[in-house]
Image (cartoon, rainbow, N blue to C red; front, side, top):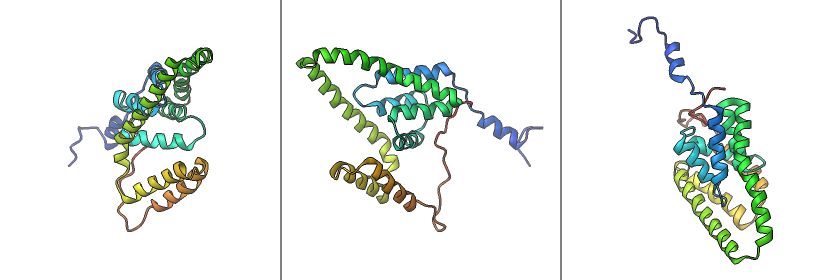
Length: 213
């Protein structure tokens, strides 16, 4: 006998549970504006994860990693690509535009201002030291986010083998990233193809949390 309240169907309950939360456009804009205005020194991936996963909860680690992989496979900057992907997922095309503007406006303004300052003071030892310090900190940020999300992706020997192969091709042999994507990508798809004898895990969406479109 069904435990559902009288007059309530399975479809009704499912629709109620699955109802998305509509994220305001201003919140999308402000979130990416803050990320774009504070992610200095190349550590933008760490800032994106902190803002989208830790603070807002719009993505989980698996969803973040999937979005990052898509962003890296597309032309353009990873951060810009991800802002468009997440914005579109949260509020459709207008959300993508708002997220893109929020992500790019701070950097564009700062680049113009700092470009003028650096052109006039590029021989200043203090400025050179600051830039070196920012560069070192960005490496630490990238390493931190790699450790935080990498262990969830590297579960088998095959995972590690593909990572090592990509690292060797790009870092040691300096193979073009486009060539690596066109070769290692199809290889990974083939190796991870569904197999009849293999017990498949339940499908997971790229984004577990989604706003209205």
